[in-house]
Image (cartoon, rainbow, N blue to C red; front, side, top):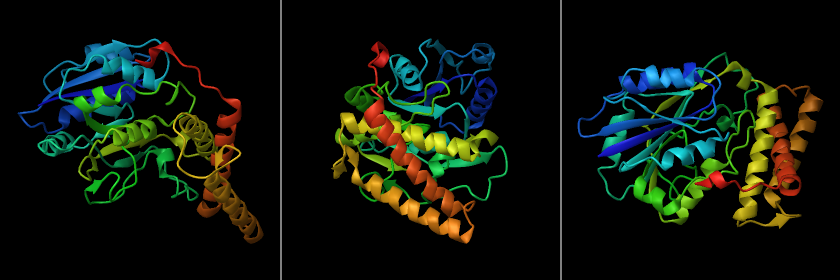
Length: 317
């Protein structure tokens, strides 16, 4: 069995080196051949030198690719053109893998009916988490941990395959196609949605996927993400991304003025909670901030729906 692991990176050379070290330390079943592909997405730091001078990872030197067009999904599609393995893994450059990561992959894909897997993101805090950190929005800091049981996507788990900790059969990738380049982070722009879009396309193609609690990565949470400003920006840009997805593949829910009605309901509920928090002088609480973020969800979707028109780029793959 062969596994190509794709890492798209932009100006995070030091974190990338830690990820490569964690892969070296991971236990690898002897029957699993692993190749690491690093896509340098227009970095201006020493990413190239780090990759080209690094020691072998799991028995082979990483493959270095350079993608000058800025955009995470553009970089991922660049790497997908180079894969030739049975399985394709996806990791983010600010993560470290658990020692059992590769053995979990090996065991899972002994079952030929498994098409993709994902697993928990556990935080590696760069600073102490603040008391207002909203538990209802764990994805903002990359904290995804639905429990200790194997869950099947679309059956007893309504989450999505997280693209920073995922493995997909190459045959299924060939069927679904490349990532949508109008989604995903571009430099400092916090647009998201590429994971949700790809997960929906996998499920529409009949893929069978599982959340595996042993497929653990540790996600670095820098201090700048532990601010209310970052949380507001993240929700706003996610709303923009979801509006684009809704434009391409309309959600099967009732809409009002072209926007899913549930977003209005959640925003109204948030306003009521904020009013109560103001009366109780608890506006700095976790519950109050979660309520505020519902308003940013709606604002981002509205802005994305009526003021953003994504431009199709030839780098779509």
